Length: 309
Image (spheres, rainbow, N blue to C red):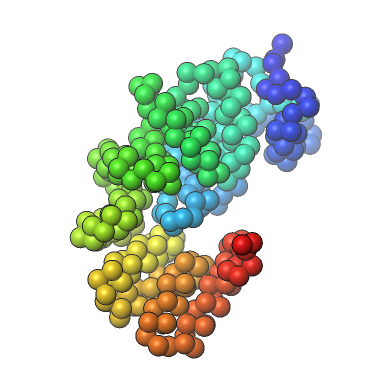
């Protein structure tokens, strides 16, 4: 007999049942298993999936997680999974993660780890799910454990990348730097980890190192229109370097280009406003701050001035 993942009165079970009800065809709800088809994120392009959109401070560029092959199935009504097929549902967790359903992914992955506590890939994916929910202190030991097990699994080369950002948000810059360096050593085309190294270098006032890393990230990002957002983030950081060098005109040009490429980048509008203040252009500063407020509203961020003290 299959074993329930959670007790029937669990709040998380109710949440997951709601998810299952959405993805399962009504006519197939009585079947033993139902096919999962694709992800909700239109940016998904198997086998790599960009899942970085939930992280904001600082603005990071796209990271990837490898998905397992298609054909993985979910349990229907009752949320029951047979232990013999739990390992197959790792791909379900990866798909939920890729489509931005981080809590649902967490539920599935915790259930798998309950049955398979030594599964490195489940630890990795759960660590990413927690990272995306900004639970960095909980994510770090899971990601580190997934590396320590020395198991080979889909996405293993990406663990250092996510550990880099996790450690960054925890304020451990030395560890973040080490993990980003390890990632670019294994994957020389990892533009986001070069970006991470640049952000750390800016924090440590190593401007030349930051310049090199940002230029490398920009080179790897390329010129495709679907990477405009990532180019804008790099341009904004290059502008930060020019501010540090007291080159206001150069910074202004970089910030303006970044805002043109990605108008929803609310942080760059704030930077533009401060530059306009420095240049004694009050009308432009007011306009930039208004655009910052609009961008924050469009992206679901609480506008400045409306937050609680």
